[in-house]
Image (cartoon, rainbow, N blue to C red):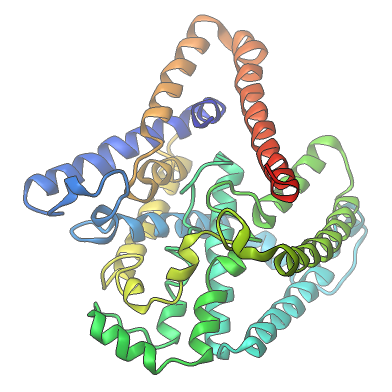
Length: 400
């Protein structure tokens, strides 16, 4: 499915992806490995491991920083528009929008304060609550921005929203030291933690994040809501109608979802499910302090993330300034792909095939035949993916 999705991406994104993977990520990493860096790399398998977390490159924070840079570029380019939203006036133009600007800002402020209050009441400190909200905002806004320009739904590690990257700021608010911990030090640390630590490290991870978007599928409100408004624009649907539908759907799904989850959990037993929990095995890793001392990379990692921001901004500036500049920051970030380069071959093959189709058959063959074929494959894949949970739920309820 990844190969079909890659075929639907723009040529500049495809080129930037495979070039970024091969030349910007793989080649320097291989040269560093030959020079003695990353000892034991050959034993790590496909997982990025030391390539993402250890010097000289620490690719994971660089990759994260590139997404932050993409978001920063958007804010810079839209600074004038954002300034115009700070108004209390309701104009005739507001009738064309989902909500007037003043209503949007009131909703943003009130809902943010409510979320901060809920996290604090649950047991986290107010500083941890701020760190959680800011992290979710930063990771998912930057991921959604990249998704809107070069979306790859259903693909793991498209953007840094996996559990590895979520508590990277929150961990500093609960006392996890910046240096590596021994098992003995972790045991002593765990003996002194309280409810604030447990609450912050759980709510700072997938228990909060999954409703915004799952790393393996990119399903979630952070990606679905912008997609709904984009679809409304294409179909001529009024944004306010979309807003009403999403609010109603959100309320209904929340009531039904949580009610059914609690009812099934107590009547059938969560331990009787195939995974024996509502999330997967890594839920138990959320609280382990020693594991977070090396994530997203060994300290110091923030300078590497800042370097990623600067690198993305430079690529974005060159892309917007010079028409012949080939590299796009989103494509290069896809190429690095959390030090995994898993889009390298699909992007390269899709780029070659797409060039051949456009050169030989022209846009007519491309638009009338190959795009529907690739899109149909993607739709079929997701239909198949929807059937699995339905069949699994029936099997779980009635037995084999």
